[in-house]
Length: 435
Image (cartoon, rainbow, N blue to C red; front, side, top):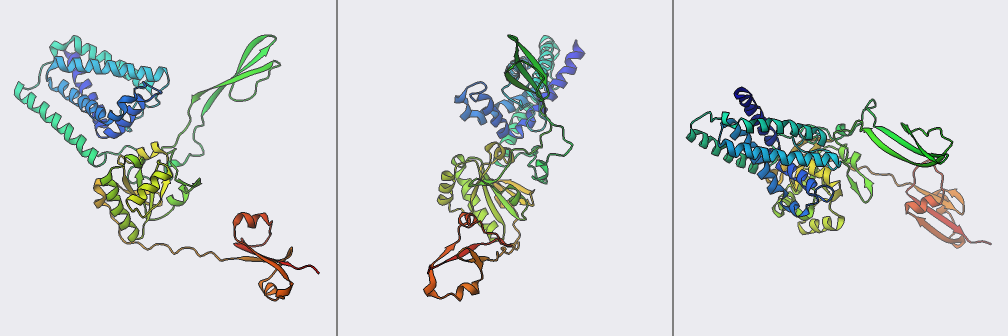
């Protein structure tokens, strides 16, 4: 028993340190996951949502410390009881999420390793068994060092955890596990390979055959039955391939600009998932950064999930020199853990990514903006219903002209059903007086 407890003490301690450190590296991301758990579709505890970040920091710091305390042998009874209560709570939470299909990713290892709730539940069951064994054999858990060094190491660990948490909150996660990390190309991470596994969906068809309901299971094809159709239900057996980035788009006024913006050189993205909660000092810092980027030839694009009224008000209040485009809030929260934050792109590849506190670290070497493409204005001339030339129209006797109409609106031009070799930008239609 002594050797089993000794092994489990080290194993469980390291496990809690690693699991806690991954979340401590990104406490805002874990706070977003807690908000999901506190939401109406899971635990329905909305009064905890405003405190999600504070709870996140407390939980992850405590998780790391318990792992360190267990290995050091600091206050064994307190440590084992705390571990037991924590794992019981998380086992209940993951079981609830899995059984009622509430949360797709438990968030146990942040973005470093995705685990669905059932996987996380069985992981927690295994840990629960280990911690129960430690609880039974608690007398074998002795400190590795004398009391004073153990206390000092424990205190230093606590200070280090708080200091690291403060650092990543004021800047960005030290290790970025997300698909929007520096060096990644956004477009490449949105591509679905031709040979990617497709989702497997099972269809259960119900028919009334001679007064008895009979079910047929197919992969989507309509079953052969002489009975009356009652209904069909579907169940996803396998989700199939999902690209690392699957919910990112850049839209404005109902038009999709994603491909256009991700194909450009020298782009600066200003990301604010919620402008109403963006930090004032951050918006002021963004103003200076955006002005500098524009002056040096960069395209500056704002991304937000806030509505146009809020975006226009913020733009006016802070005299921002760029427009905001719409993007999904979850995607923006994934892109950068700062509200606001800044990314520098080259043809969709992330070159730099910084918290608003670190905008001075951005490099904006002067670049030459491409010359705007000058579109040739093509005017079509009509006399009555017959196509003509400008010279023919100019040669008309003004006394013979009843009216001369100019069409510039695209819808008006299209409504004329004009067929010419070039894409026209306007129409001059002359109506003559009748004899």
